[in-house]
Image (cartoon, rainbow, N blue to C red; front, side):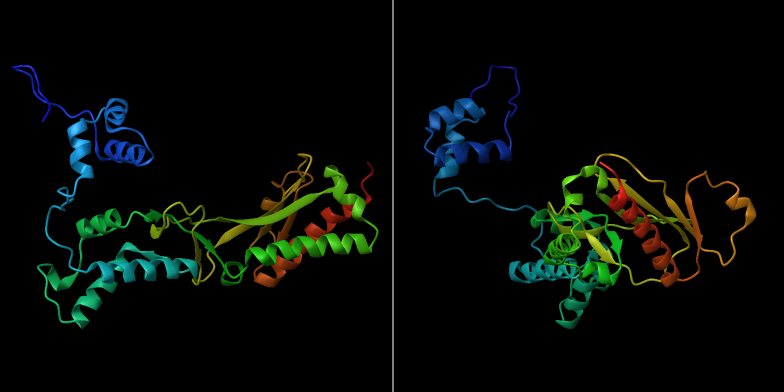
Length: 281
C-alpha cells in the first residue's frame, strides 16, 4: 500500500477497469512508470498484476454448474434468441432446476430452484448476456432474412425499369414507404428476456391469439411529405359516432378478420403508389 500521512486514511483512486486499461497500454509498449502516472495506478500494483504470482480469485461459494455446463446454457439461450424464442429469467431458472434434478444433484436451494441472486451472478459471469425487452413479431416476419429484404428492393427496381418508370427512383417526391402498426386497446408490459449484449433488436415470435387493437397504416414520402393515415377498426359495421370523429381526408375501414385487414392495407398502399406514379416533378 502506498505511503500516507499520519492520521489520514488510504483511499484507492483506481478500480479494476482502470487497471485493465493500464495493463493494455503496457502491452502496447508503454512503460510501467508512464502507465502508472497516466492511469493513477501504483507502479507496484501493475508489476504485481504482470507477475506470475497474481491469480484473480472469486469470492463466495463455487457455482453449482461447471464452466462447461454454463457455457452450454449460454449457447442454448443465444440459439433460442436466434430462432425468435428468447428465454426469460424464469425459463432459465426452471431449466437449470430440471438439469440438476435429472442429474441427481442436491443443493441448498429449495427444490434445486435458483434464485434472483444466482441469476444476477450468472449474468455477471457471462457479460455477453443482457436482460432486454423483446419486440413481438409474427412467425412469418421472424423468418424474413436480410437477403430477402435486399431481393425485394432489387425486384422493385427491376419492375419499375421493365415498365419504363425507373425515373421514379431519381425523384424523392415520388418515393413512398408504407407500413402498418397496431395500437393495443389493452396494452400489457412485456417481461424482459435474456439476449446477446449489444443486440439492437430482440424479436419474439408471438404465438398467442391476436389482442384487441386498432390497425393504423402510415405512408411517408422520401422528401418529408406525409399522407393521411388510414385506421382499420375491428367492427363488422362502423358505428356512426366513430365515423363522425374521423378527421377529413383520413382513411377508415372496418374488419373482423386478418385477410380483410390485409386487403384494405394493400388497397391503401396501391393508391399511394398511384400518386407517386402520376406525380409531376
